[in-house]
Image 1 (cartoon, rainbow, N blue to C red):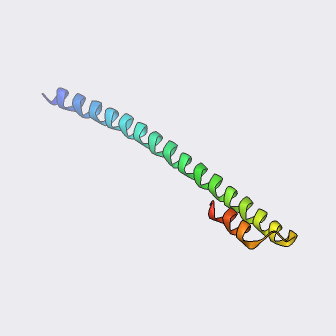
Image 2 (image 1 turned 30 degrees about the horizontal axis):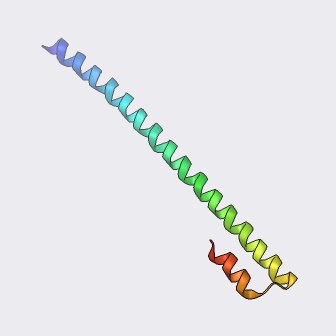
Image 3 (image 1 turned 90 degrees about the horizontal axis):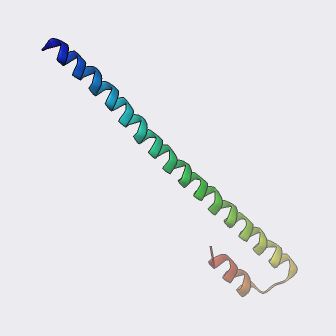
Length: 72
């Protein structure tokens, strides 16, 4: 019985290690996707605001610039 108990203990530890590794891989993949989406969103917002700034310097009406910013 003790041999089986030790064997089961080792097997359970290995299986739990594998499961934890798989779950961590899934979580890290999801986090990297969220970070990539966040970076893309910030870059789009920055480009839109820069375009709005340039349009205001050129003399485009404020209403059109507000419409551009509202698309964010």
